[in-house]
Length: 263
Length: 75
Image (tube, rainbow over all chains, first blue to last red; front, top):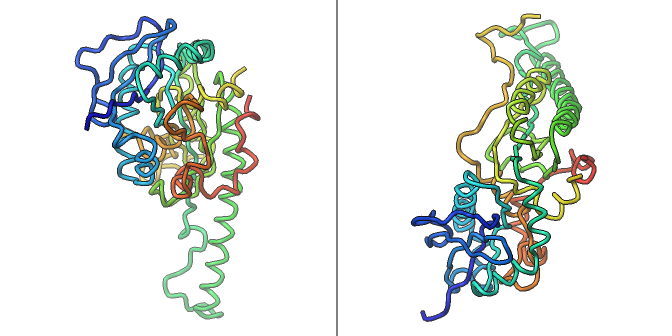
């Protein structure tokens, strides 16, 4: 009960970071607040050791409901701040034992963090997902309802089935080629790009096969162009079902991978 | 070619999703963001600590795009 709270870090902003009035409610129900050191401001919140200490955290991360609640709370605070100014998001569950320990990290990592901040300033992250568009099975092997051709309904079924499978194969092949073209073109409009592993259909709750799961760091003045290009690409590559998400805080471009991708 | 009429499906337009999908969020908050090792309570970057079930969420079936699965190739 009397354990001192831990400091959950949401994101890093520059010195002139917002002073919250009331603060957005974040992880664990506490309000987010600024914590300044080394000319930077961390957006932090106090969280209970009983829920966010190492042992508890390890266990809670296994609980999908807890994970969702926490991820959404983390994101909402970051997004709130990101509307006001550039922020470097922290990975989920970056927890320090105290504000002092968090401030020490700011001092130690100030150069890296400032670099990351510079990289993402004036830019936003956009997500583009590509699924194989399901071919129209009925069109592939269309057959009269009666099915009583000379070769009988069994053969007719097999013929239809073969045609369907061939159509699916073609569609997938076309979608893969399309995804590569889409990624190449969108990368050209971006300061940086990052490809994530495809999401599994069970988790994503979608039926289709995902073949592109990418994030792009796009200058704000190019955002409109980027969106228009995605729409245009979707029209050009009909074998591919494209989904655009964003703008996101630049989650995908502040870590090691983002650093390497950015030139 | 005007095979696309308003009665059939239009182009596959790039759909903007309104609510942030949990999977998209988990991709980012579990695999993106600044990673601090060392004096944090527990770091998700430390793969050993991330359990199988959690990993299953973020990286899934993927043989298809193995070749594209490297951010360093992109720039």
